[in-house]
Image (cartoon, rainbow, N blue to C red):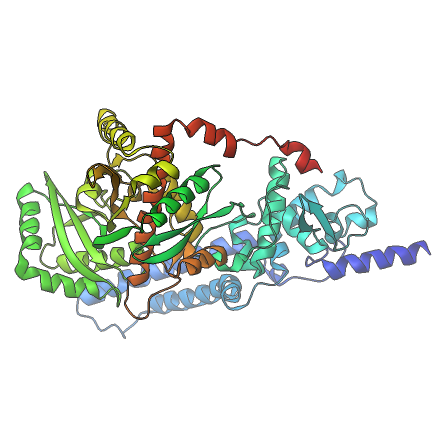
Length: 587
């Protein structure tokens, strides 16, 4: 009975595990046993023989070429050299080449987890045989070593913070231990397993064991990990939940939009919603697109400042623009070069390319076009040294005056006239108070602080929330939030004219995070999902206008709260919870 149980346990283990046992008393011979020397000495001998023979033949052929001797006339020593090189090449190809070709052609199977460092594992196992505290018979089988204690493991569901997590199987447990010990790189799990969800679960469990910290509050299930592979995020272990609220309807250019905002800041959505209400009751807002062009600015270097100036004059010559545009536009069917602005610093030249990119945000598109132009210029300027494809004169994800003045992405101005009674009844303040506060805070105060593009109350709040909800690059909030808010009393001081001017809104409706399910749904809510079929670039331009309209609403509401002294009160109401979160989580 006991022997039958032992055999059944062993069989069940071997059916799950991809590894093979190490039979220490196995009499089967290996191919390397036929060699008269140890394997490493044999390899070294053939390596030396191959390179020595090749070197000898090359030297002999060089002498023949110099002395005009026919190459087909060979001596006895050359025949020996040819035979030695061919023989050693065949040996080396047979020893190293077969495994390499198989690794490229054959799809990795479950055995890959045991075979990657097989030689090292075997040495370690043999070295540690005597230290194992297991029966001798069990110590002979490598597959037993990598298993947990002989308790039956089944696939079941556990609940952590109301999120289901699958208990690992025998095979997953083997892979987890391989990742923890460093035998399997964590970044290679997706390619080896072919299952992104399973790879994320294994990486997550390995991380918890390595750090000793629990990730039970970070959800794993309910996400399409295939959609981010090679595009949005590497080595995922879960995803972060950010609530999405709706502000609106925002009446912009005669149409209503419900604006999705992903944020964890209380009061932000409510405040923006109040601004939307004031704009709607006053007849809506109007936006105008001033400019649409993504930029990239490589930096190149010459031996002298004169040569750098020569290239600057060449690029700024209108007669050369058409040729450069043709070269640039080859990068994409949507890319259209608009202009090149140059700045010189000694021997270094900064070339700021601006181009239309359709409905894509366009950083990759413009970079490919710039590379085409740089390759083209090498023929006329062979002494040009390309230091970097980006020289920070673009300028991407950094506050910069060049973006504030020249613009980057979409440049938009949005305005509205808020009626006096709406200011009093909805915004709870007066036109005079808003105009005075805007002048002292957004204009004078920002100037005193030395602000760069920050002549506003909180444009970045709204930009960040809309960007996260719609799959934009959150880091580009830096320049996209450049904004100047203007307020002025009109109609004999009865009404309020408010406007926001944003010169560098960087958005797209295709590519990047816009293709994820949640972000795609938010874009669909706004009616700008994907590329516009009627007019390339129309969806991204509309999204930029909606961002500016939402910023206008947010600025109007926050400034009103400040003017009325309601900021602290509203935040204590919407940004502070009396609910005991710890008790709620435990329940």
